[in-house]
Amino acid sequence: MDITTHTTIDQTLCGTPVELEEGRSIVRLNTRMNMAADETGLVHGGFIFGLADYAAMLAVNHPNVVLGSAESRFLRPVRAGETVEAHAQSDPFNGRKHIVNVSVLRNGDTVFEGVFTCFVTDRHVLAGG
Image 1 (tube, helix red, strand yellow):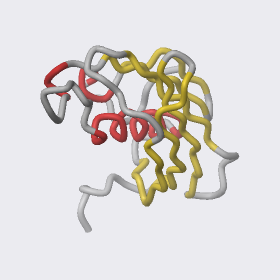
Image 2 (cartoon, rainbow, N blue to C red):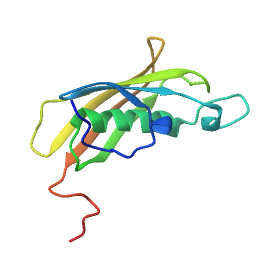
Image 3 (tube, helix red, strand yellow):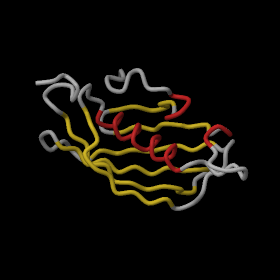
Image 4 (cartoon, rainbow, N blue to C red):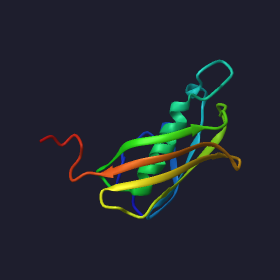
C-alpha cells in the first residue's frame, strides 16, 4: 500500500513505517540523544506523541487527514537509544471522522496509549477559501 499522507515528514523524528494496510499501521522510531529532555537521556514526550500521531495518520492514509483531538497516557519513560513502535488501528470509517487507537511499545511493554480523532477534509487545511 502506498503512503498518501504526510509524505515529506522527517522519519528520523517521527518514525519509519514498517507495516501499512487499510486502517492499520506500525511505525518504528529509533530514539536518539538529540531527543533527550535532560542529561539522563529521558526522551521528551513530544517525540513519542509525534510517533503515535504519525502512526494514526498512516492508519487513515488520506492526503487531507488532520488531527482533531487526542486523549493520551504516558505509561513508562523512554531512554534515548531505545527503539519504540507505534501500532495504530482505525475504527471502521464513519464519514469524515476516524477514531484511531494507538499503542507505543518498547520490547513488548506499552509505554504510551492514545485515542486519536482524525478528520478527512474535502481539501487540504492550508488550501484557503
